[in-house]
Image 1 (spheres, one colour):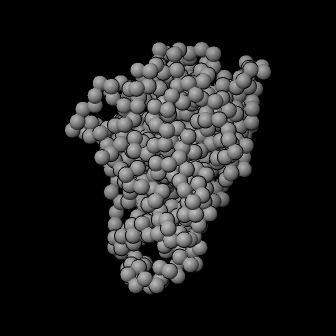
Image 2 (spheres, rainbow, N blue to C red; image 1 turned 135 degrees about the horizontal axis):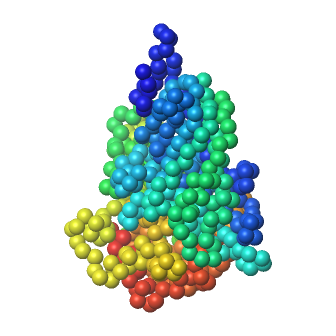
Length: 554
């Protein structure tokens, strides 16, 4: 009797039940055999390049364990996402038959049918959910299999960015490690991924061959040993709340991670909608949330810096509240882990609503209709700050936008104009003169159905007194970085950037064409371009703006 997949969790041997065990496979970044953090310190290569790695990500599939008798155990539905910066270095192989094994195999990348499948099929938190891995390239097909980004230079020359992405064009990258190991219970199998070997194959000064880069990715993986897993996994399932309203996920969108402790209910959503327009949430009763997040402006503001309840300008532009269910954190710097946190911040900030939470709760509690709304939403009477924030969170989570001209054209209901199609081509094409590609390279940061990956980046605006993400992390590596927004409804939410400095889309496109500042933390996807940008022609800039306008609903 042989276990050929994941369907068997135990094996009967000599009248005793031998339970299957979980094997935790780790693939950790290394530099010349030594553990390496991402982002890394500056490293010097054999070619005397000074290199700093800011991203190392990969998708894994096709896991196979080889027994000593030559038979194999396959894991057809197991996939992994490895990411050095986030510390995601583990793939769990469930229910492995205990015993001796001669080695293991896996593929860096995905099989063609899976690569081409709808990415919206994967549940929240799954390695192939685009919100998890940030490797999905969108309409030009499939995922990046490996992403390696950073900065490089020689001698005293200023460092430039590099951004190498292996995809289906690189071919199959099959790793085989012929090292015996034994599974006697929960087990950790440790492997290393030598980034120095990857970097050695990168064509910094000239175009390279994808095949040689793919071969380098395979050779860079090495065996590092096994041990007993002292932290075996424990799975638990959440029970849906009574009366829960499902969030309708648009076709092609990834499955979001919704708060388990605040399920959507009709009463909660309605209460949140009322609170969103209630001026009593501000200290002087003069301002509601909707004042700075207007529906006609895609729930953002037309002013660069919104005025707070006391007339003071804010420090950052009011972002759109559409499609927040797909964001991993909130505010331009990610300071709010959940929408409820951002709601409280807005109510109490002296630059915004300048309210006192205790006074707000007391005022709302005196309103019989509002008191009934809270009782209906939460199953018991009582108004408090947590409930206000939770109701606002429920309402905002339902603000979904996915019916733009672009979406209707994708469904075959309308057609894009020639100018819009040209802009789409520019949007989806790399800027890589060595390969004859002169696109706008937008999709690297704004790919997929959401048109944004919500990663914190320095996009070349130049440093100001606002330190961005570094305010939260305290790291100099995050100076000047702000969250990459979605481009959905971008035509309705001028002005642009975290401080509202750019008045219209033409100015945004012009910035990336000829206004990029080469700062220390400039995103490598921009740093690989010439100074001060990719120098799009006036006609190309016009076409790109035309396409961006198709992303706005209504």
